[in-house]
Image 1 (cartoon, rainbow, N blue to C red):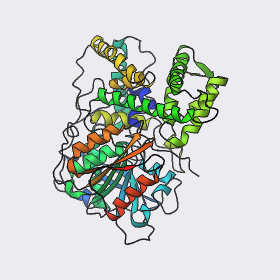
Image 2: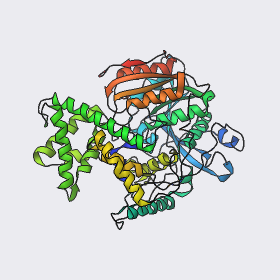
Image 3: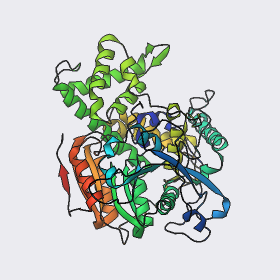
Image 4: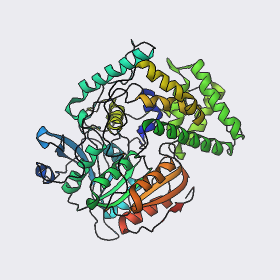
Length: 514
């Protein structure tokens, strides 16, 4: 049996926020968007996958393979890298086979192969007509994984002043370069979208049919903008932003996490035995007090100090899925009544994909966070070279504290620290920022969940405007991150579109709990 690993948007997760102030990655110019085979790319488009046994525990019928893609699509002579793929062939029933549907579970930094291997059951209906195909993007898991040497923590010798901290950030960047190899400068969503087109051709599909979650929605939108004529039936669930600067992303994320926490506390107040009682206003104050209390005086659990920041990480992780809310309620009860943090902190501990399967351990333990930083920095066009004096950076951060604390007393400070996640790096590509109603896009479905803690509903509306009249929005009025896995209504709507092509105009809705 596999441990269930729910995909989540690592982009703004609390675990990532903890390390974000010390993470950056080397960047290079993005390839020219939209180019197809030719100019030295033919050998990549003409290859075929040799599907074979997977070197890890997988469901029956799942097969694995590899393909080559250019290190740099703009200059294929620079060499190639290997991408790991997995496929579960269509099982049949209900009509003729429709080719492949490519699944991306999000991140950036999430392994598609590990997620599909962990639980393919939600896609069983799609899998009757489609081959279910997924992959690990470049730099992730089984596809040339990047690393910062096993830890994304700053050097313990770094001082507390701004100058020392920022110098330590630059040293961490050098460490990432040293441990990641040649793929690091060629990570980013524009590069991965070009890889998607090679995958599409290699699978034998004239157009890309795609279901992307969380960060996978950014990837899908970028692919559609580059290759509108090769875009088939595309669904984006838990829609990411394409336009907001890093500071605005962090601020919106803090508000989204707070809305999700308020939703949880309302749910808890209606249950007997909720540790915070039935008053949701005072319940929020008590959670804030818990975090402040443990920051001032941490608990000790198995020789480890548990701070308020650890509580924030655990709560943020548990808010991703309503199915984990009972465990969150139990963890908060234990820590409040018995000063026992163990049940709560377990909720914030991410699964290590390197522990899964029977194959050799070759995924660096810090790969998910290293890849997250590399992709997000490569996609961020707002930064210049490292010209700002440390005092100016510190003053800028201090000037934002009030606004972030107003958004959320507990999530705001950790989200604010992500503003420094790309400090000192050259600006990334501006292609994503410039997407504005691309010509020739087919109709596509965007799913936004009102209580989503990671990709707030306003990003669904924003991205729909950027994609233009081709975008149809499904308003899921439920809780948790994304809708397909938890809402039968969303799943039926998505499956109908992907299988039958039916997609009415205008916004549609799925009620909470359905």
